[in-house]
Amino acid sequence: MHNVAFCYHQTAAPCSMQVGAQLLAITIKDVSRTDKPASYSGLLLSVSAIDPAALVSKLESINVYCPIPEFIACAQYAKSDSTLEQSKLVTYDGQSIEWQINTLQNLLPLREQLIAEELATLNNSGKQLITTIDDALTQTAELKTSRDERLNQAQFTAKSSGVDVQLITAGTAKQLADSVASKGGDDRYWALCLFVGELAELNQIKEVL
Image (cartoon, rainbow, N blue to C red; front, side, top):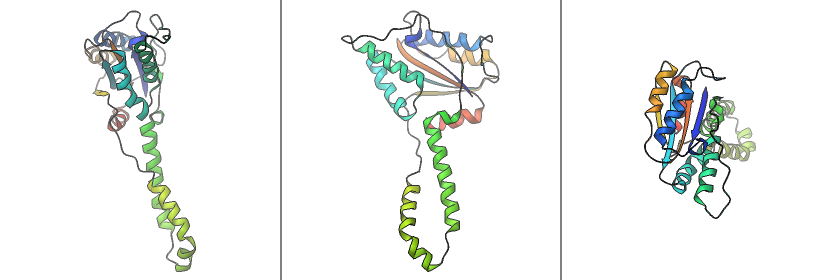
């Protein structure tokens, strides 16, 4: 799985989310870039707002629930932009957009879900090993209670991240780029993150966001 992100503070000049999506689309179609994906179905996460403070507020939910480095950096820039009395972070002049190789385990909700599933499997295996010998049950009752309490805490429940999530089925880079380019509106503060991979992987992400 791959991902590429593009946020308002990375542009050479202020622009709307629509223009930002078009710039991201150009990156997707650029086959000369390193670490580009081999397949092009995608899951596009997007957030936008009319002012930086509102963008910070919208990004807080996703950054706590499912931290994405580019969204965290975007929130920091937006917070700086919204606080005139503080020194602003330096905005890069036309920062390069590059693909990154990613794995499902890098996303916190999926990692927690995997841990919960593994613990559930462990719990089921443990139950099969528990004998019915009265003396053993008596001696281990306290340990069993403590163990069950720990295992019960491992349940995972998906939450809403507050971001717009769009699953895009595409066979080529151009098809994916065309879908991404049509995203967005006139908001000047925005963040985009595109995951590209197999549909099964993308649906896993979609289910928890």
